[in-house]
Length: 344
Image 1 (cartoon, rainbow, N blue to C red):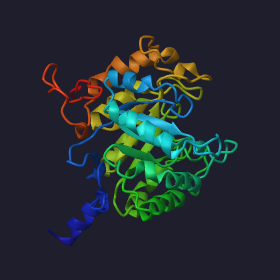
Image 2: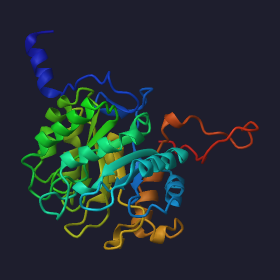
Image 3: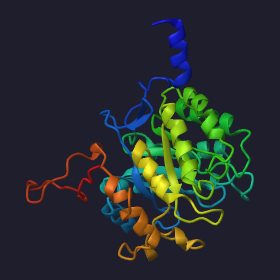
């Protein structure tokens, strides 16, 4: 192959460092995969665990929708106090595993830094992850660490790239081998395309190559064209992308939710809808009322059972093993929280 052709290929695709050091969930060829190499397309729901720790039934209820993942905001002690302890996080992970859900944990206090009073920095989020390391080590096949939720406010992005790279390197130096998910600035929506344009540099800075990018699709993504173009930019460069928050309504524009679901299905990009219940100031974001799975809202119906919705597109992670068939379990063998595999 000529040097000219090689140069042309190099300019077309992003070649991330090999993820040989990663264990459990990892990024491979621009895709999130399990330890066995099988593609894992997350289909799940956000649940406000930090504010509703007593709503443990939400885990089983979310699993019953067909979800294969759940995203849990955690309080890290900056904007909100007290911080979730290592013991509380361990409990959350146990609930995820009992209900056969991949667990995405997010450091929530960083939301809107620079505009939101008392919001934490990305560095402070790293300190939190380091402080609860005991609850996380050994869970790499089940847990994704969402480094910092919506880490900067609108048009506050100048240090996003350097701050994110520093955070990834600190966690890797401390021995964390988990898949790391990094959020865009601009309240997660990447209005200025900071994450989109700097994603190759950030991924290359991870010595394991085990980093996924997360965009939140709210009011800015108000047309199918915007949604499609953003997805296409990551797919074309073989960069791993997630939509860890989106909804059907937003005060700053109506999200093109049909397009989010359509193109996420087309490109097999993971998505996690916001949120199960408990949005006291924006109840239109609730999928069910008062944590009752029988009381689905219009948003819940659309997200769960509509065209390209969660129930039609979710497949359980293989790490949980095969589902026992009724009447075949041997005496003394316990099969926790059995749920069907929702085939793609």
